[in-house]
Length: 328
Image 1: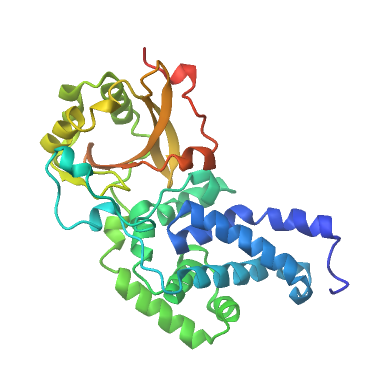
Image 2 (image 1 turned 60 degrees about the vertical axis):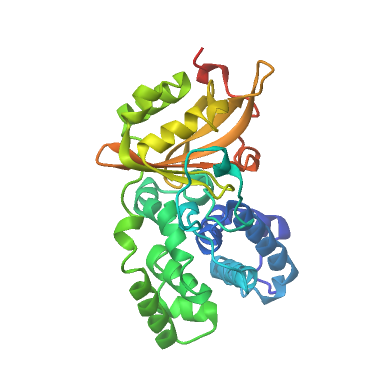
């Protein structure tokens, strides 16, 4: 270990300051909150095991990114890409019980991320980078080969210089520029889709109406908030619906157990989403879903309910909704 290194305690504290940005980087690379957390943990373990390769404290950040990149590339080796749930099924389902008959393979879909776990720091940076963690953009990134993905995120999102990326990946500046050009070409048709239609916190009236209609289970009010061709999907189930009529019919049929639910806003992927607790049949509530919405021209165009309740614990959400979030 070089003489420039701080004490172990000081170095551990400095490494911890990079955890959130590393989590955001790994999330963009892997498309999964759980995989990103695991990758960052593995990064820290590998870092401690190879402290003798750190060339002084000034190199700490780039050194950690090099390790994190290798962890992500190892994780992605041979793995099928993740996608948005609606892109994993060929046709929409009719809103009947059979819509819940099939499930998607584990790890097939892009998972949501708590905004504060992947973005932070300067408020101006938060606004500038918010689009880079949108669900649609993260899904678009998964189309790229892993090394192109790393180059695009490092160059376009994190604003690293080509020389820095080349050093991190152990390649040439020319190779980095070539990979960036190919990545840009691949994503050219995705950019507008990835950066539009998300729900923002300033759409308070729409969000308030959505919560009110859902919690009262007023389907007449609910359907007025939807576009006629609104889409609903619910991983891990393979089902997806394509029309406001089918969404409402499903909620009154197979989804009727959501009647009486409580919703609480939570910032997910740079946008407002909702944690949903459903009645447990014994007078209480149980975690059920994270609802991510998309909006177009003032109405809801997509509702994705992620049913992985492990997200509640990962994000520090309570097992039961706060009293003030109730609607009764």
